[in-house]
Length: 179
Length: 126
Image (tube, each protein chain N blue to C red):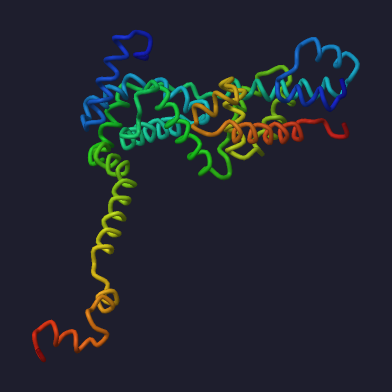
């Protein structure tokens, strides 16, 4: 559910944001209801456990409330909230060492070549959380380097370097031995 | 195209189907690599919790917001902090400029004899 799409809806959202920035918790709750599904969907990309997703979603909205004063209406509220959410996901992933189990074992077992999938899952689990974070954005969300940089507020060079390094590592992991 | 180049392109996802198929037709090692990178990419695509917020989620966030400070004032203060610091520095500089320098006062005295100047200025010895 999103207000995006119609000028009236955008104006309504603008009023809610203005009221919330002024300290109106009711207006902020309305913003939570409008954007909660999007935040859950994004957080669900990085965490398999429902409680982790809920925690990150709550953290996202709490941080959004605290930082509302930094929101500039030049960009849609949704973009700003995406950045807050991604930063919460990144911070939580970095705190999780060793990394949480990222991939679905049952899913792997259902596939025609479960051995290969299980082995690759095992290899992917050796990636650092911040490396998986970039790969999930690139290959999971299908975002470009420029899109990731924009949505995270990182420089393009920073994302490009990280993407290059993690792809290099991925290749090293997946290349058959002796080739 | 070399194995190294084709694997680099397979890894970054930047190669065309024609380039790949031409190379893979005659290279078992790269065919295996292509299958593995394909699986990895699929695992990343399918990696999702598929969790939906329940009806009480917004309520739980609201409950946690109780006691949270209103953000606007705090961030307004942070935004004006540089200007505040600059203003304080200017005021400090102006205050320093306005303070009479004892050494300068001494040099500006009418005579080279401090005591004589005091005596002169108070009318003694005239």
